[in-house]
Every structure is written in structure tokens, then in C-alpha cells.
Image (cartoon, rainbow, N blue to C red; front, side, top):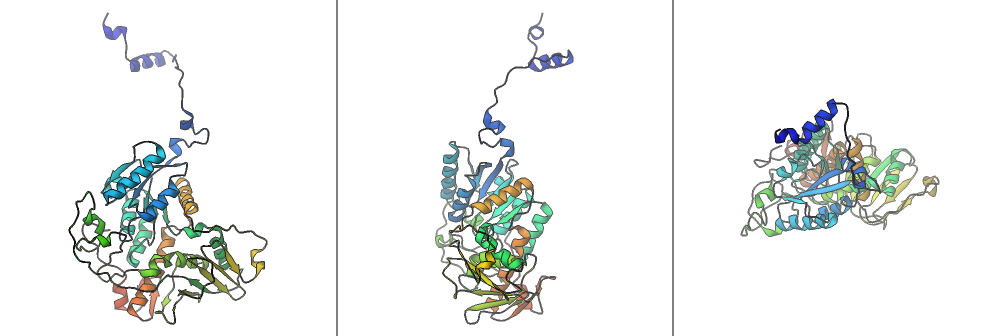
Length: 428
């Protein structure tokens, strides 16, 4: 008798047993972690995450993702070799292995089918482009702000995520802090009476085009990939002083200054308070007496100002109605025109603007396919408001924005500032 007849293969043995109506089952020991026991999350329920551009702010964000029991962080992409290795050490230290992959080209990370979502914390120059690439690759995105460089990018970001059906969360984490959310609720629900004015703190009101720094010897690509660092911006010579998130602009684009960088947090909250998440102010005036005044079609004013705030910490906002007002800041505290506005509610005071709650909102929506508090369409309109304010600053005159046509009314110069050309091959 042949050896094959004496020792049939495992597959043939199982097939014969099934056909005969009997299957001999061997006992299997399955680890509890696979089943999600003892507080562990089963692999099938984990969200596999990669990171793109994880520097100072990105490392903080990473620290909010890693403790989440349903997150498995598996890869990092960065144009700087030292940062790639630093993030790998953090991630591998968390999991006790050497599994975190490193990439210099984001497309290699985005091509991985096992990755569900990406954390994007590059310099502002890359935010929208990387997020749009990620959405087209089927990834959900948590993106630091400012999320876009201009009005055209804001619209494209929202449209891309709508078409792709992906989850997007802008890094304006104050929407998920209790006292800011409650202040916005008071304004939005009429508890302050008819809303009159919302105030945002921009941390500076300047707008300019970026120039070139003196040329320096370019390092090896494995140390710093300068071409990829520039990405869609105009080429310019390497200068080490530009390696810390500098927001390159060209072709009429504007460096955002305080309005876009820090102010996008406060403007975002004002948009929410004014029930304007689907629109933007239609009139923008240049700064006068330390204030930049804009106006919504509803008549509500959005005022950007640096001074005149109560001592409630950074990123303050104030909402005024004809029956009351509320002001809040990063201390976690609010001041109300009347204690009656609390209506017996106790609002948690969480200072220091942590992003953990915002990250958790994002992860929950990745699982449920719901809409996070600062989704792409919401971020789009808040950024349009900031970009338009910057254009008014740059031009030094009043401009009017048509929110239906997405163009400035009768103003060719302002309309040219809505977008900028992108360098090959990073076209959108």
C-alpha cells in the first residue's frame, strides 16, 4: 500500500470525515484577549491607526490615541528621520514589541489595507492635501488645524469626505469640553434671548505672503526629505529654520497668522453658538480699534478681538444676547450674566483644553459611522470664515462673501485669494 494511502492529508481526512457524517473535534484553547474578555478589546473590534507627520502637537495627539483600548497604532510616516524613530519608540514601548512600521512616503502608509484611520498632524501646508489623499484611500481622518490653506481647499475637503463617506474630525477639541459646549448651547437655544454678537480671540490679526529664507546645504533625504516637506507648496531652498511647521503659501495665498492658527478654535465655537455650522459671515471689515467685525446674513455679528476678555484662560469666547451673556475660556470656567442660566445644572470644569474627549468622539464615530462634532463640512465653514477675515486684513478693506456662490461680491482681487496653485505632483 502506498504511503499516501496509509497517511492521508489532513484536508483529505476532514473531507472524508464530513462526507461520512462524523467530524472529530480537537479541543482548542482560545486566548481571552481574542474574545474580548477581562476588559480587552477583541482584534475585530479594534481601530487600526497610522500617523502622518507626528511632531510636537502630533505627539500630544498620539498620547490621546494610544491609551484607548480599542486602538492599535501600527505605523508612522514622517519626512524627518528623527521623528519617525521617536514615534516608533513611543509606540513600540506602549505595546512591548518592535512592530510599528515607519515610512517616508505617506502613500505607502495609505496603501495598507489594514489601516482604518489616520492621525494627520503635519505642518499646515500638508493638512488638507494629506486628508484628501487619505479619504480617497478609504481612511477615516483626525486632522489637526488649521485644516486648509484657503477657501477652495475648504470646499474640496468637505466635498471629498462627503463623496468618500469617510469620517473626519478637525482638531478643534474644545467642542468636546463641557463648559464650552454648554456656553454654545445657551446661545444656540435662545437662553440668552435673541443672539446679538459672538466674540472670538484670534491671538493676532496679521496676514502676509511667505518669502524665502537664505539657502542652506540640504541634508540627506533619510534625515529630512525637503521635497516632500514642501509638498504642494512652491519650491524654495532648504533652510533649517523652516522645519517647524511653517505654513508655506504662494500664488496669492496668505499665511494665516493668528486668525487661522489659534483663532480657528474660537471662530469654530462662535459658528456653533450662532447656529452657523452650515454657513459663514457675509461681510468682513478690516481691523479697527483692535476689532475685526464680521456679520452673518442673520444679522448676528462675529467680532474678533485680542483684548477686553475676562481672566478665564486662553482661547476665550463670549456670546451676547438681548437677555444675557456668557464667557468661557481654557481655565474650564464660565462667567454668566445670571446664575439662573445654569437652570440647576452643574457643568464640569475641565481646564487645559485636553483632546482626549475629542479623540474619543472621533473613534466612536469611526465605529458607528456617525458624524463627529467637527466633521469636514463643519470645519469647512469655520475655515472659510477665517480665510475671508484674513483676506479683509490683507486687502485692508471691507469685502462681502456670497455663501451660495462661494465668491466675493464684485471683487476680483479678493476672489483671486480664494485659492492657490499646487506644485506637481501633489495636485488634488
